[in-house]
Length: 532
Ligand SMILES: [Zn+2]
Ligand SMILES: [Zn+2]
Image 1 (cartoon, rainbow, N blue to C red):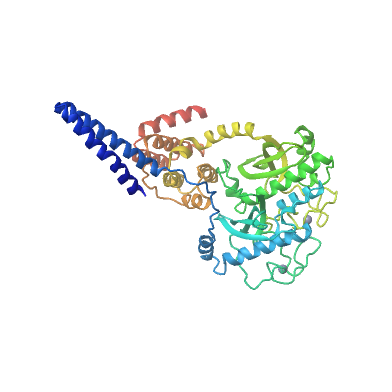
Image 2 (cartoon, rainbow, N blue to C red):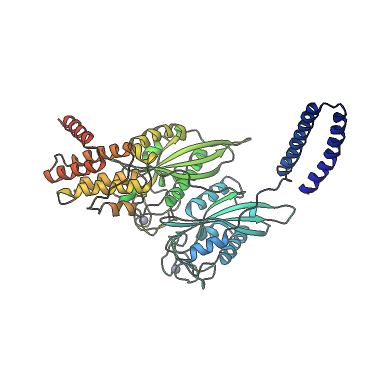
């Protein structure tokens, strides 16, 4: 095609040049003739190049991007830990669930849904909507796996489902989570307990009557935790601020569970604000939140919840806090978008119960499902339902973000912005080796280094391995990072109150290796004068 055009172009231009050249030659002015010919040839070349260039950028008929089916990739990745996993079987189960969603009651679907999602559907139903109407009277025409991730605690698969016939279709994204250690059980039928395989019969506390497993925890099988129209995909955008090292103290804590719990409190908050009834809400909210319930504008009209994302973990005298960002909308005519940080609080000294998983609406002592009873405690064991993550405060995201920027600057210093993970790891090993200089690492030193490693975004397991380093590596650092590390070394050396001779010797050797002896001297003088 391109060659044809070029030939055609040449056929038009060449005779034209020949004729023109001949006429100019008759004027016997050879110089003018040569110049004119070269100008014309140049123009011709330019024209040709323009034609060929526009050939390359010829507009293509508009084609919408196709959903990428990465089922094969997901299968390969998941099979290394779970040889029985098959993306085909997963898709069949997903389609089976879609058809149940069109025909079953919400309570019958509950064993397959996380508590956060279940609460959302219940709340929507309570306000007169048919939450799963997209699945009623229609069939799944195709399903593709569009994403999979394997995190520290959870595996996540997202499937895009197309519903309806060719003329009238709609798509829906379904996100499933499963505990990382869970394995596919090929012999199980859909209506069986995902743990023991017995026909599923639930007790009053919503557990398998045979083995007591919590069926929608995600500990044993995939649980649906997100359901959104269209091609909406959840993506983790920012890392979690954790300056006090909450995750180091509570290894079972995971963002997925906290996000599901936050979604649960959101829907109960919506209910409480719209109906004025507080009984159900007070089972997942603190006293402080109940007092401030009316301070935040009530949602109006159609409420929908988009992305839910854990952004920070804090720890203080009153307990731990999880700051979860919720993107949601409401409105009677046009939807209004909101971004609100839901602050969940948990009393001091509590850790994540290991078997609850995504069944986030449960008593943390006896693991019974939280019912709609009005008592403030669990009606099965009497424990306070506030011994769990409860909604404590709401804050608009823009004001929260201002504080977070300051905090990030404070804790991350130069490191988070300008170093590689390998540099941060080496720096933490250098610091640990200093802590061992006097024989052993004290609790104060350990706490300090754990918090530092976490604020640098190092994985908990790596932080722990760094804290075992008695030998200092020689890190390759920029001048700024070397100075910053020297300052951390000086502060660590002073953490116990006074510097032992052995520590002093190691400190000077380390600063020598970093080329920062002079700065170390200054930092120590400054720290000593601040103490007095
Ligand atoms: Zn069972
Ligand atoms: Zn209980």
